Every structure is written in structure tokens, then in C-alpha cells.
Length: 264
Image (cartoon, rainbow, N blue to C red; front, side, top):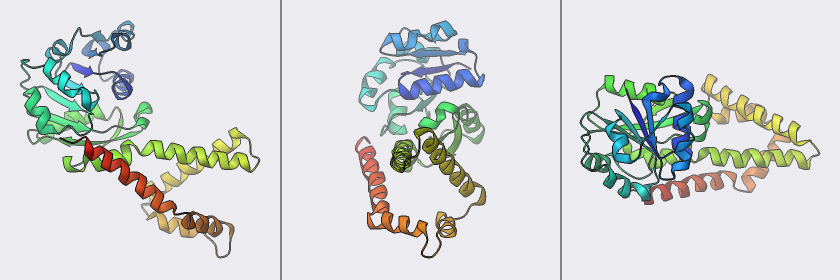
């Protein structure tokens, strides 16, 4: 099976690297194209094929990742018009471009939309995935096996793609801001950067894993930590007074609205 990747920017590069690291495909089975040729050319030394144009890439691939910006999609689709795409699978990371449009422009009934996130760089991402109606379960599993090189795969209806973009797609950026703020708080209290960083990261990792393993509502564990008239309740009161919940919810909703603006 040949895999093509159109666009090796941030997302396309992550997908390419994970396919190579996983060993699921040999470099010779992967073909890439990027508008800025230098970004693609450096992978030639690793055995990856470099296509001269998008049309050639699609012709040589069974599965094609579409990793260009939404505003560049019309030009990309125009470049692959006329290619026989029967049986080819198109997997899109483009925000707002619906599967019906991808099918119309590519001529393929096998279209997939995904929204990987940055932890996919180390195989720890989560990838919300929507499949067109043409897929049966066996065909879905083939795609899922490819996507699992990025981390966990969760199937979602396409109508929720803007929502999952705001939660898991953009979410890591919000988490990084939170982590940076907590580290800075440690610095203010006199801790070294290295110690503060380790305390914050391990606390977040352990707390997230506890929730995942135990399955409890987050509020249950929050109450376990919060003693009457203790230190934690003072911090909780400060967070609530400053409106932390509303701030976070508004950030997610604003991100969602922006993702909806891309839909067409």
C-alpha cells in the first residue's frame, strides 16, 4: 500500500515522522509533496519519494493525506482533477472542509476527516476521526491502524469536528499555557525552574492518569484534596473568584466559533 502526504508543514510532518518511526511502511512506500520543495527534499535522504506535483502523488498512492491549509484547498484540488481515484482513500486534516466537498473535488467516495494534536509527535496524541458512509468496518480498521501510529483514535460524527478541534486539537496549547503559568508560580515562590517544572508536569501527569484509570468525576478527587479551612480551599476560592471556569469555557467556545467559520 502506498501512502501519499500533500503538505509537510506542522501536521503533515508529524504524520510523516510517525509513519516512518512506526515501521508500518517502508520509506519507499511513502511519497510526499510540498509547495516549498526544500521542506520535502530533506526526506529524500531517508528514502521517501518526492513527487514533482500533487497529481503524480495521488496517482502513486492508495491512501492520501491532505495536510494543507483550508485556504489552499481549492488550488490543491484543481491540481489533482482528472486523476482516477477509484478505491483511493483521502484523509484530510483541513479544518472546515467537509467530506462531501472532498468527495466532490477528488471523485473518491472514501473520505476521512481527522484532527490530530501535538502529542502525536511522540505517539501519545488523540485523533478524532470521521468516515464517509462508503466505509465498511473492515475498511475503517485499515485506516485506524494507520492513524494509531499517532496515538489513540476516536470515531466521531462529522458534525462534531469543530467541537473536537477546540477541545483536543487546540487544547494542548491551553494546557501548555497552564503549565507555564504554574511553573512561573513556583519561580515566584523561590523554586528553581527545573524543580518547579518537574513538580508541575508530574502532578498533571499523575492527576490525568488517576482520572483515566479510576473513571471518577474530576470533582470527586478535587474534594478529596480540599480540607475544611485548609490551604487548598483558599486556592480554589481564588480560582472561582477570578472566574477560572468561565475563562476556560470561553476560550474553548471562541476556538469553536473560529473553527465553524472555516466550514463551507
